[in-house]
Length: 57
Length: 280
Image (tube, rainbow over all chains, first blue to last red; front, side, top):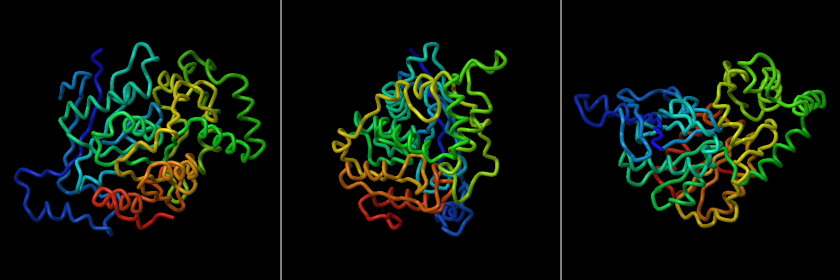
């Protein structure tokens, strides 16, 4: 069987050209922020992993 | 890694509620086999907790994650327990949210829920269950509950156990019926919402929970469909675990009490051995 399992990763952009200020704002986790506020430099990536652990984007 | 409930729902219902956790964590949502965007099986007997445990492990290995924190909500919490019982060496944290350790005890909760129902509603539900829940209406509808049963069971009977503080104004019991029905019937069963008699009835973990040594956080709502007594029992069985019962909260704790939910999870991930601030 070669079943494909869907995954979606959500993370901050730890690398790249985002300014340190933007990154600091994203990581500050303000408790008073909107409850479902998506971090400013949030990235999502989707793909599949099959039963043999093969990544398929 | 985050695993969803249903069984047969998808990761979508976590969004956007859990995304603030991405400030400090890499979140990986998956759709379990047969659910959401993951592949479906020709033969539904392959929809088992044990097979889904191997799928979680395949994703962990495929993405080269090393040790992970595993959060399971509702049925996903059953899956997370099963994963921990087999692969706890791969876990740094275990988070069991609005879930149950024993299908037998969950069925007792459902029986009590039914006893507390308004008699008229209970009679209607019993009548529909007695007549058989599938095979009604046009051909395209035969493989799922009727709208009438979805509304009675999920819309009326379950609702106070799903939402309390912050009901989703868009909650629609018929829309909730957009699920993987072949999977659902295989795992949950075909006899309705108040008894699990599919292959999920094999989920009886109480005796083995004491073998879990991974830092564990257990969260439930005080009005949770998965009654808080089940969470207390898991807390007693898992040494060193933390228990958080959220006030004015049903099964969708992260919708009813998003700030408290996120704080409990974030604090636990940072310091799994500290006493939770909101437990009672």
